[in-house]
Amino acid sequence: MNILYHSTRNSSPEITASQAILKGLADDGGLFVPVKMPKLVKTFDELGELNYKEIALEVMKLFLTDFTDDELKNCIESAYDSKFDSSEIVPVKEADGAYYLELFHGATIAFKDMALSILPHLMTTAAKKNELKEDIVILTATSGDTGKAAMAGFADVPHTKIIVFYPKHGVSPVQEKQMVTQKGANTHVIGIEGNFDAAQSGVKAMFNNKELAVKMKDAGYVFSSANSINIGRLIPQVCYYVYAYAKLLKDGKIKENEKINVVVPTGNFGNILAAFYAKQIGTPIDKLICASNKNKVLFDFFTTGTYDKNREFVVTKSPSMDILISSNLERLIYKICGENSNVTASLMKELSENGKYTITSEMADKLAGFVSGYADEDATSEIIKYLYDKTGYVIDTHTAVAAKVYSDYRKESGDETVTVIASTASPYKFARAVLGSIDPSFDSLSDEEQVDKLCEVSGVKIPPAIEEIRTAPVRHNTVCETEDMQKEVEKYLGI
Ligand SMILES: *Cc1c(COP(=O)(O)O)cnc(C)c1O
Image 1 (cartoon, rainbow, N blue to C red):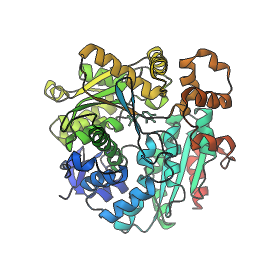
Image 2: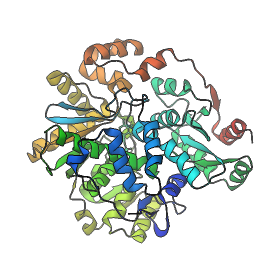
Image 3: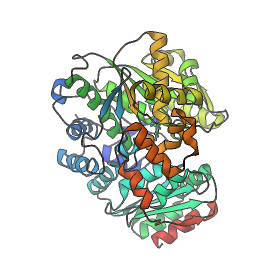
Image 4: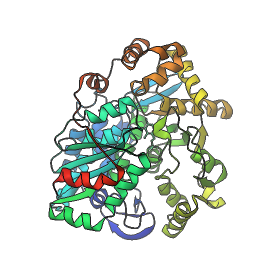
């Protein structure tokens, strides 16, 4: 079956998967969605015999139908290699009656590596397929994690360059160290004297600058984006939910066709949407449990039917979930309004004009497969300590939000369905917050000492990503004013 894509805000034109990956966002501002949902071909018994890379191929070829099997195999081999510190790629760990799907064994020890290590290869393959003459320049604004994961993915990938802007005074010391030590002749990192919103606005302005586009084209360059609305990031995330189910079945933890629940710590709604797609293509999933931190705009949406971003932005210990506009929710809205692009477009217009919208009760009825909850800062710390004291297993602050929401749901509902929790970051990435939850006296330790203490406490080896930044030389030290971002890009590209 050939799968084409169109915008959530307009059902035409229909374009191929490779074109959608190159474009990222539709011209009307909508997100690309498959015109039809494919279905898994192999049974889960058969999938249980396959390793992660083989399952990734089975899933990706359903969605990316204008790529050949050989092209996808090459992309998968280049992505899920020794950059991962586990040959299983995504190990599944049982603790306190739940299965933790560890998505953080890649280059930057957060789940974004799952998609950002393959996106560059999908993009360069798509460029060849569409006879793109120009080199791709990825332009990204980051609040810390995405920029590093994108650079790690694109470093030294031929015919690409990546430029990342981050708020010079708005990221954690580990995040900054990770970025400024980035290797790769095609990577460029710039700190700006402004906040994340300023970085994002500057990047958007460059994307929309027609004059700059012409100048770029003359020099043999074209811009593209690596942010999480690209289907080239979404589809690789569907694979690990299919893998998790196949693995649980193979290991005898569930019976054939037995449904499981999935819990996802959510920010931009990308990861949980991938689980929803996994369900749509035939993975026996019952409840999708959406876990938020104190920025609980999604919890309020699921419980009231109103999405309202007009509220105070709270800075939490799970910063990658500190978000008030969950872009990927648009794809779910499209689904529950009966795949109606006019309705989707008008709700999104309300969101951009008033910062809120309300869905109809018919649409709300279609959300029955979702459960939502949220955890505040104390509850997040408490569950890290509880799980460690009880089992010795140490989770990061984002995963802890999911664990807490699951624990509440299980108590309230009595639902004992086998459950997978998406574990989105290594505790090493948020060592101070994690150790402080286990024993507040650890807070007096230096950043360096925290790493060693976490190793001692968790019994988990220090990941290469952390070892590396302890000694890596700084390679990037450009800092600029917000209004000079374009000048910096032109200087770097020599245009
Ligand atoms: C990005 C991120 C999330 C949120 O994922 P979404 O796909 O944006 O919902 C959760 N945890 C960590 C560690 C992340 O980096």
